[in-house]
Image (cartoon, rainbow, N blue to C red; front, top):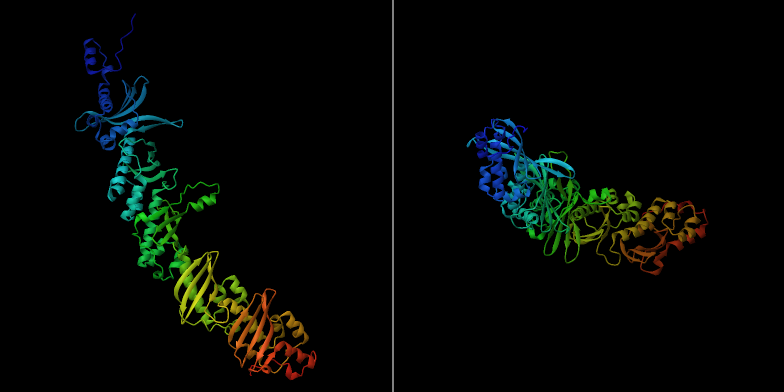
Length: 635
């Protein structure tokens, strides 16, 4: 016996009338006619590539988001919606105006879910969205066609705007946060950036993107001529906007690790150059690291060093942005290299490099920013490298040092001198003796910078100071500039102030020992031979009748120096001294002293010989009382 007849699950309108005529009382087979007809109209329009019919078959929301560009049909094909015979599987009435329909498509019975909506104008049901199951890496997820189409069309709008659009078009396709980064860029630099990122994309209407959507974030990878374009998009007010752009390429010069960072570096650098040219130190303070501004720019006369303005042609600029994702086995190296970027301006005679440091945001409401931490000038002819910090620090240091020399400020001289200068001169000098050093040739006048020459860790600053031209030799010690010497034009003696003072120091200490009657001081400043023949033979300083101290304070006339010996000439032919120094244990000491009281040979007295004769005449420790008192200042 035959069982009851079951009506077909799918029936067109003619089939329904036929069923009624045959006496089928059950209308269950015709209950899905509206849903089937609505979905069929959509599917046939899609298969035929008729965009106008597709718009007729869809809701206003679907049309505005998924069909708003002529290329929409090309992008719909990328989603690979299944085609074939339709079979309604399930209908869910969400509301009087919304239905969700599960459909089995084709021989494989692939399941799709359509959302239908009652059009308030035509009173017809239309497709409002399609949900397609997608599987990736073992994870299955249902994706909205509207969302995917909105994203793909947003990518097209982005590409069009960044390739041929104006500033407003470019900013319209990105998130407000991204636009805030791009908006301050000078027009030439914004155009350069967009062309650097998009200018080398493949032409043609057919794109081949790969997209991954989350709830509010999407990642799109798009093949281009030099590699791949990576876009990060975010949903804003129901629409997708680009939030970051990267160009991945095996060629380092073609790669753009982060367009945001590239824009930030460009803005920081051009803003710095404009503020520098205007002499706006308040603005510079906000654009520079505290160390660079406070230690170099704040006290500097910016007009002493000329830098290009912020409207320098973009074609003459190279920008190297450090990739935050830099690959290294050393995490500290990766972090360090990921924070430093360069903005390089190539000029006809010199190259300017601005070094920038990335400062991370303090919280989620703020963006990371780049601060200028150094500016370096490379002179192409001389191949000199001039760091702006060293340049301005050098000028400030010269000013401080010149004032300290003029005022005999021993504390500042010690603090501002190199280790070698301090060890050989200032460390051994006490406050009372500094006023007796031969510094009169360094005039008490403000140094006027004439030139600055950098040579590795050494910097030479030539100045006009009063009536003289001096050169201050500066040494970079672990980032700190210190004065290593002062060169001054002289005749008959070294131009080095350090060498001159080093040789004068034992002479003046010798004189101080005589003046104060300190035998131990004389022993420290005398050679081993002088000590053996003289000072070790007497418990006190003999008085031989000469005002030795006055002779040793005569003006310095000349110095003849070899590696381990020096001859200092003080005074003139009628009054003065000739002091012979030798190097012992790494320092110079007095070995002989010739007193000059006239032009005749009998007026020249060898101090060592005279003291030995005096000790021999009176015997050790048996000098008359009046002959062992401290030596007088009077001639």
